[in-house]
Image (cartoon, rainbow, N blue to C red):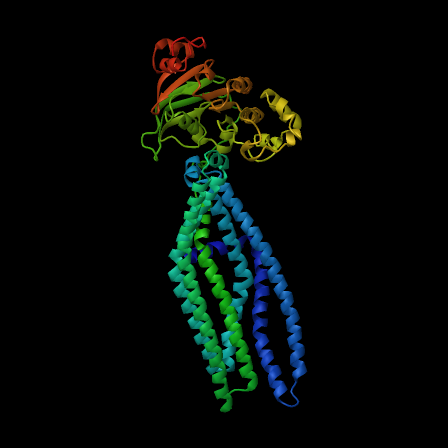
Length: 584
């Protein structure tokens, strides 16, 4: 996105504020005209004072009246500009947020949450500064300059020509600096993203940093990124310093030239004292307005990369958009079918899912086992349309999931992750992510079913207890049971349990397994597990290897077959009866 494109895209946000924007423009037009009248009236007052019997008080009264009108116009423009800029910033940030949370998980993970947050916040602030600067500074400056030159040339061509020369120098200097800094500013933005990405990553993992006594190395890494950011920033700052020197020198020389030309014209009877004073005021007005535009344009140049990244995020297509003819999934029984499904993960050529076919009756429990990278998570991601198959078809109750609305599909699927996925909110708020309108009685019932009510009611405030970032104020077992309660509250006909007990001790695992059994009751359930003890009661076990189903059957039949699963069961010291064997 070029500078002009970023500028135009930012200003296009004003379309939804047409009435208020027109009012701001009218107020700014008045401000531009009134600013031009100031030096004219000043010159008239000086001229009247220099002549006996001049109408000085008439000019002073007019000047005072126009000053009152100017204040009223300024307040109107300022107040409405602030309101518009704040509303448009928050609306645009909301759009970016809405799009960010619909992006494929792989894209979000690749970017990092810190960088995404920096894109949203920096882009929103850049848009705010652009809109506010345009309405409060650029518009009145543009209107004043548009009126200044016709009036100045109508009064005195020679002195007006000096003003025009000053304007040319200003524009040339700014264009030079813009060209020299546009690429550099992009690098500044990239280094800032790297800095904030690292900062967010470290702060979100403070316990790990402290546990490994890694404070100095993390601080050193951040200092190195700070150095990179400053290296990118200093050349840009240097050019802006050059711009300041050039424009200040041009301003001083122009003012001297105005009075020099004016004095010569006055000596030859071609200019009055009042005109010279007025043109001195015109020079001040021109310098002030050009400074305003220069500062605003410099701000646009600095913020253009942030706005480009921001609008790229706003425009980015979600991974699996709804088809125009997509239908809602209703009255779900939970029958699942994979028909020759293949999906290649571009980032990792050897990973994916290949030629998978499967029929799961409604209400059945299916376990997916296999080494890391075998395709278990990919298979479930495809069922939720976090990814789409490259070949084949996935059906729920006989309907191709690509022909269903994403909202209705995901509403039909509940998920309990290995990482419970909790927010720094109250217990009630975390549960209501599953069903926003749930009553307190429904929350309590879900917690009881998940074996969680006993610990929740002991917390200060009970359901109103705030659990900390990612639920850090709860134990591991408490976090998992809260996540299970959330899935129970959602009451989805299809349930995915993704390594839900892998990080728990034996006693806690038993409690959580009770909760999981309650959550799975009457639902089509998929269990992703490394602990084979958690899948012994599954109706069907799928053994995946390198993206393919290599074995399938019940626990007993797979152990008896002596294949891959039997080796895994033996390594886990499990017999088909679930007891520990003597031989490891």
